[in-house]
Image (cartoon, rainbow, N blue to C red; front, side):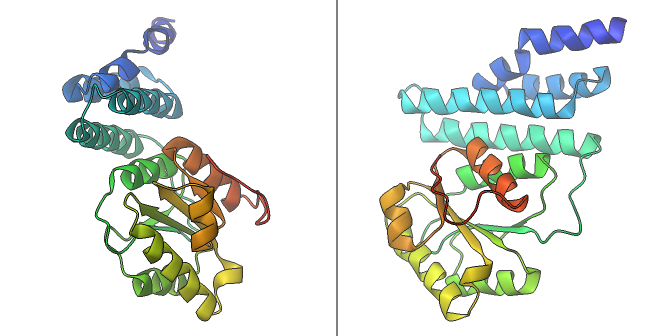
Length: 228
């Protein structure tokens, strides 16, 4: 009964989300360890950490946090997720090709990419992270090697649009386009999706991860319009 009460108290007080929003790394990690010891559900802790990271994003948008704060938040969030994954029984589905993910050529931003990959892994997805400033040919080779049917391209500068388009065009040239769904994320919108030839665009890491999960499960269909 004591453990149950501790779990309910942990969930009710939202301390993890609060500490995440304050960029308090030590408290975030200690709370995750405490939650694991008390039997708090791993996915609930991940959801609360994600809620705290959303607060960081809101403070950044409001001009109260700066880019360096956003980067610190992403690092703390990734550490927390990795701690949960290491201590839980969330195992990736091994018989499904991994999602191929990377920041496109000419762009070295990786905050959104890293957060979305962490969320995907917390949901049991296998992800092949190609890193940043990735050449178009590298994405194509990864698709061929893994047999992946989902490609996620990240970019936070306008020159990334041409890189994204080049990758989609190369998929077409290699006869792979009909087999692969392309999700673009970052500084994107519907016009960018149309220009690059991608299937979906996302600006929110959590919703983007949910979209990828639906795609991996066979829904939504390619013709569906999705923007998040």
